[in-house]
Amino acid sequence: MIIDAKRVGIGEQGEPATLNNLASDLNKELFAKHIFNALLSDAISVNRSLPDVRPRECKTKLYLKKLPMVSIIVIFFNEHKSVLLRSVHSLINRSPPELVKEIILVDDFSDLDSLHKSLDDYIAQHFTKVRILRLNERSGLIRARMAGARIAKAEVLVFMDSHIEAGYNWLPPLLEPIVLNSRTVMGPTIDFINGTQFFYGKYDYGMRGIFDFSLRYLKTSRLPEDQKHPSEPFKNLIMMGGSVVISAKFFWELGGYDEGLDIYGGEQFDLSFKIWMCGGQLYEAPCSRVAHLSRSSHLHLYNTKNVTVTKYIYRNYKRVAEVWMDDYKKYVSMRMGSSYRRANPGDLTLARALRSKCKPFKWFLQNVAYDVMKRFPPIKPPNYAYGAIRNVAEPDMCVDAHPITNGNHVDLEQCAEAVPQSNSSQFWELTAYRDLRLASKDFCLEVRAPQYITSLWIWRCHYQGRNQYWLYDFQAKLLKQVFKNTTRCLEMLPHTKQLIINQCNSSNRYMQWTFSFNNPNALGNNQNNYSIQSA
Ligand code: UDP
Ligand code: MN
Image 1 (cartoon, rainbow, N blue to C red):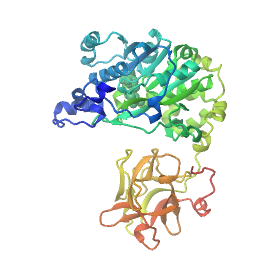
Image 2 (cartoon, rainbow, N blue to C red):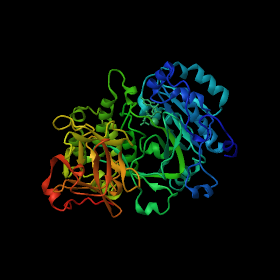
Image 3 (cartoon, rainbow, N blue to C red):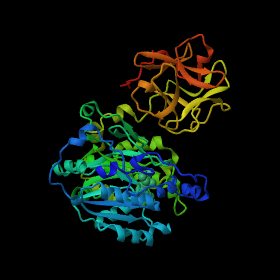
Image 4 (tube, protein in one colour):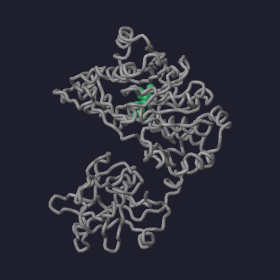
């Protein structure tokens, strides 16, 4: 840490970095291949320093003197070499050497030249504990992990994505709980590396993973009892998937991952359900930080053998639901649509045999995931209102979040003709959770800044009310944002077509809005007739 603190240079300390030749053809070509700034990665040291973002208490925390050794399994398919190497160097540099037995790189049949001889040579020159297992055919991430696990020699297995950077002292906080109970499975808090500038981004203290009946992995605040001690491990319903630490013995008792899961998708549910329902428990340790390179929409890179990645995902989700969710699988089927219903989950015999020793899904919902049914009722309660949100003074103007990405600014645009498609950036739902949601995504209209008059953006729905809490006064046509005892109203600024919230004024027609569809029963009933409460 002392040596790292003195490092200077491009991307050091996890600072944003840029290159001069951003527009070069090579840069564009590499960006298209990886969906991150691969050329910039080449300019940043594979040993770069990172900020220490752990909660303060972590820095003085003591751990058991004797901890088990780990085998770290890093799987990759066509990973950019410098990104892969930075992952490996960070794992070596930031782990107590006596705890790392080996790092196994599993090559899932990559075809990039840079990942063959030159990678072998680099590893031979720089490392003693790192070896490569080359698969003879494309197996997908699940079977690649299983192949790595089969040859691993240490007592504890660590699964890692190939584009991570491990933080200071990341390993002991993950191992201690496993020593205390070998059926505890751990994950670090996952921070992010920005794909364009490679800066380090921190997620505050970690969030609890949760799911809904569309098998979406969502993040929510920690339970109130877990918020009292922000640096202690807390129970996680669903793991993020990219970094898992598990006792090898327990992993094999569970039968490992379901190897019927092909290419990509579903494995985080498979393993999380399995852990909870078959006698284990899943925790996240906020004192352990691992940053994951974040990319938007790169999954098309996994289309293979003329099959799109979405098809693999549907098939895998269906496997998970068929094997683990008992009667509740019908809700998944109802919500997922026809591609899911048509998917063939393959032979389930082995997976079901392993599962038969475990507890019912109902037990899991009642005892572990006890807030899922309440927060994400499988049959969605009706919306208060939905469709396009038009301005009354200028009825051609609609609230528009294009393009639909987290943190995108929301303003007004020309309304789509008729009612917009449900996947459009103009199709909003005022939901039973009292948030204003883009129908196709889990993004919500959110107040951006603490100022009284401020603009709006979309952010992941957090289901907690607050800066995402909206009421529609359908008689006055006001859309009210209620936050900390302050009520403000949505307003269009006519000259700039900007959207803001401001002091409510029911005679200002630029503050009046209509939805394509209203649910007058719900809206008229003091908007209080649903059981879902804003926390
Ligand atoms: N991966 C693999 N084979 C595949 C697809 C993915 O080995 O067919 C690897 C990939 O290189 C990465 C990990 O699996 O190390 C997880 O994939 P990715 O990071 O794309 O998933 P995400 O983190 O975006 O969910
Ligand atoms: Mn990843």
